[in-house]
Length: 466
Image 1: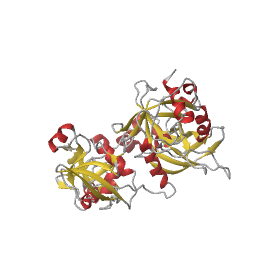
Image 2 (image 1 turned 60 degrees about the vertical axis):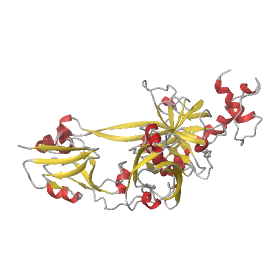
Image 3 (image 1 turned 90 degrees about the vertical axis):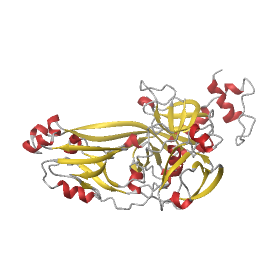
Image 4 (image 1 turned 120 degrees about the vertical axis):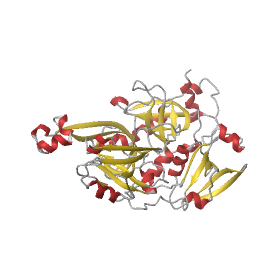
């Protein structure tokens, strides 16, 4: 008797009603001989293959990546005539509405020129990209099947999952065709996984491999509880540690898919650190966990809620938070314009405060500019840092200044050592206050350049010239 067969009892023939909270073990030999087939038969048609293509231009000679080479030989030099090649990507997706709305991972269709969705019955449809959310690693597609109502999966409550619950993963691993694997929920709220900016993943030992990305993680009622996204592996194949984006986050992204534009999410306006065992003991907390607030920015939602330095945020709307990543995830699943209930630890007591859910403001306006000319910042795109932009690029929303958004490959800025996320402080000893300063001063024609940047918590001084 394999452990996975115990699952069928809970799904189909268990004497306890399906909606009961209590989990029970099999009671007879007949119960452990049951099959996942009925659940798979009902759900598999809603899981699709997603093929994407993008055209990539590459220079015939690597010398053409050098700006000095292009300066002497010209942009149209035959030495650097670009060639084109087509890159293809294979993943999975889930139909979540009968009108042909499909959810998949952003990394499956990233930079795609063409996206094709193949149904379980082998029909192919060109897909339109309705929304991408790179930070959550999710994308919403739409296919047109006429008046036909397509099979789809209903959402389950990922917040109701418990470690040990049985789950099924459906996708197209390694391109071999639709495959179903089974396992259990190994852990919840895994935050130290770099698959997206909002880290609170469902961990499962159901086999997930390359090609499964964007596929379905379902419970035994056939409801979608997660989108399979990443694996931990040293070989490239499954070793029983896979991760899925919870349905709670998927529904948030899906809710605004028809509206287009940037996704607005609430912000806190405070920074903190995990409340470790040592911190918990010093504060008189019975158990470690939560986020110890070390800074509250005036005028922010945190300040309006009355949060103070030294408070420990323990939960949001009844959902416990363990660290900063967990806190950001919970906020990201809430709706701007409403409010949330925070439970905090303050001075040896539990308090409840009301947090207004507002989007971070874009003040000052970003005014992004790309630096050109013969200077060490040429090829860098810089912008004024606001709470909205900081949240968008995953930085501390309390930071201000002029930030480097992008550094062109092969540019003078890249060769000088400028990196994405650097905050420019000074240029030739002049204090930088806005993006326009950089563009103006970089055209000064200096022979010697001195640039001071803040990278993380360090200030770097870089010089170039005679």
